[in-house]
Amino acid sequence: MSLPDPFRELARRFPADRFLTDRTELFVYECDGLPVHRQPPAAVVLCETRDEVVACVKWCAANEVPFVPRGAGTGLSGGATPVRGCLLLDLNRMRAIRKIDARSRYAVVEPGLINVRLTEAAKPHRLMYAPDPSSQTACTLGGNIAENSGGPHCLKYGVTIDHVLGLEVVLPDGEVVRLGGPIADHPDHDLVQLFVGAEGTFGVVTEITLRLTPDPPEVRTFLAIFDSMAKACRTVTEITRSGIVPVALEILDRRTIEAVEASVNRAGYPTNAAAVLLVELDGFAAGMDEEERAIVAMARANDPIELRSARDPAERVALWKGRKGAFGAMGRVDTDLYVLDGVVPRTALEETLEKVYEIADRYRVKVSNVFHAGDGNLHPNISYDGRDADVTARVLAAGEEMLRACVAAGGSISGEHGIGLEKRDFMPLLFGEGDLALMTGIRDAIDPEGIANPGKGFPDRRAKRRKARA
Ligand SMILES: Cc1cc2nc3c(=O)[nH]c(=O)nc-3n(C[C@H](O)[C@H](O)[C@H](O)COP(=O)(O)OP(=O)(O)OC[C@H]3O[C@@H](n4cnc5c(N)ncnc54)[C@H](O)[C@@H]3O)c2cc1C
Image 1 (cartoon, rainbow, N blue to C red):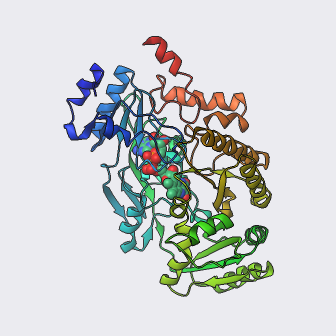
Image 2: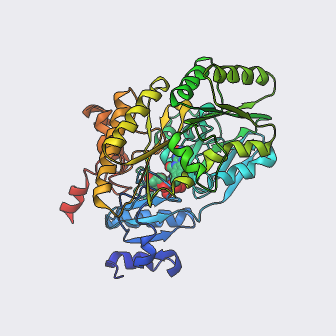
Image 3: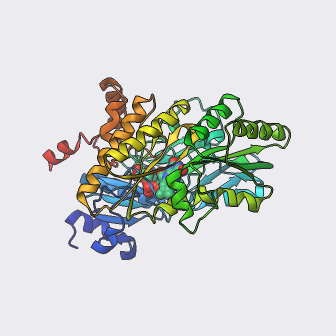
């Protein structure tokens, strides 16, 4: 492919196999896990060091070229989807664990490290990295920081932002700043909290200092299988109202159960199951018997078809099998999957789900739900054939209505997947003009030229300005 002149000058600074411009190679990068938006980048650099990131970002700033940071591309809101003419910075090769300080319980890592690798490395020290997105065997910690990711076990431990102690960031003009660090209570403004969840719009994270959490000595996992979603939701509300904080409270609906049972991840759920509730407790053994008994009693009171509990790690894996295999199972339903992400108060789970099914029926799309019930974090999953423009239009319209239903129930348009391209136009559903102006004002202060992942989170108001200057 012929490159615009300034790109050729940058390309000369990298080995050819780390500066990609071939159309077929760029094809891989044209979207993330949200298949409805696609745009190939002008070029991709496979960065190996912080200094290479700095060189690329400085070049982008000098040439007014937008850049898009990318981890594993598992994002579900279009955050890593390229913008026209951009340089895409692939950070997967920056995956070193620079330090594990077991005594002070923190780790220093590069952004391309895959989430689960940190827990594997911390395990010999009887520590773990608590936030565990369901994509944790693929997604990078840099992506987790940018999206402020959650996961099934975040109900008790909190999401990514609760575990980030420090960041090294290459700002949009190429300057390198270090924010926070392993020591708590810095006297300055807490800019780490500002940068977590910024979706790559404040620059590129090149080093991360993360809190490590003690590996819990005791874990209890059990399933309650119900013939109605109402009973499962009621049990969740009762558990959370009781003050017991399980580490995970996950629900699969009937259509997910059907998909799981038709797949290799078959978990042996009864044919009349309408909802599977997975509960996990962890911590010290003392007091756990009482908590388990109390939860089982709450589930029993809602008349389950079946209760299953794990007695050893192998049985625990078996109970998680259906939940962990749910997304893979949906891959069989159709060629594309649109994974939505909305939040509602836990007490509104049941009525919002009913609304979601009603919307899906009205738009004639196939929806299934597997979700972090303890957080009220819904994931309506729409299976569809993206090659059909009419179907895709109906999927998008249904998705928008589902998110509006979450807001109407007192919730929000994102629990953990971020705003990205997908939901930037829905921000006014939640925020007034003043709120949005404050947020975009902060972005403008950090990135006055608007070159860092533009158009994500908010509409790209500065694209016009760049175009006018060009
Ligand atoms: C099957 C499946 C299950 C999932 N389950 C969960 C879940 O349970 N919880 C959850 O929260 N999410 C989940 N996700 C969504 C996704 O995995 C997360 O958002 C994850 O954090 C994305 O990481 P990534 O490395 O793939 O980032 P990418 O998709 O590559 O990028 C995501 C965003 O981060 C930015 N970015 C990446 N690296 C950097 C960096 N170093 N500096 C600055 N910005 C950067 C990108 O520009 C983009 O805006 C799931 C996705 C899939 C496909």
